[in-house]
Image (cartoon, rainbow, N blue to C red):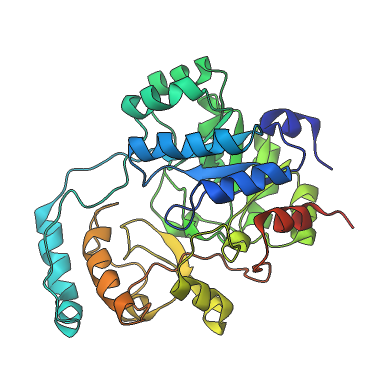
Length: 348
């Protein structure tokens, strides 16, 4: 049952939120899901301010339904050249194999945390809904957003994180289970042994907080949606199932991996960005090890890996590509995002 408090929070007909997936979508997917009655999300963490404003413009032109803007709010560390010297040394055999030179590009990591400049740009739109990953921005930014009448939610991967978010005044909490694809939202600890599955995490968070809880991780069909709601969640956040929809910008190699038996083996890795994220296991993950101690801090680890990825993909290889994907791909379908959203929300 779609609870009244969650319906008021989302402002949607359906308890379905499309997970923001940076790098594999733009506003087209956002619009399709919102128009279907769910809450479409726009990932803004890898976009410039100009791109964010442009994409919001497209959304506003195409729909009058609620939508979600998603931002990272990590603490941006200084670029550490010594980390990259060690990382490039480790990756040297791959650069030699592909016959390319590894370049030091400290400004190449395009993941900017939410800040007042971004707030200045989006304030005229007064978005109905903003979600955060990696905690929350500082208090003055939160107060500013709340002043627009915008609802705020963020991801929690542990009970401790959920309680911290509630203490900061969020309107809802996304309980991100270990099954979820893409980056872990963990922010109070970097110990991945603290992470638990959705079905264990959701009811525990529900029992500890008074704000609405959104379930995420491993939900791929209407049965999974109903199961998450039975655990106490008021809505669900779904990403992986949308990766094959025509509105998604998922690459050809990424789509092929999802459709293949390779998608049955996913793992958490830090080699692509510097933070733990779940993706389909490929060559570089196997050979380097999933969690490598030399991977530079987030988001700088992406600098060298992106160089390798670009060259390898020219050769039709996904060996160095971040194939972000959750543990359950059974719901991935090459159908419109609208049709998929309605199927996910079906109750019979």
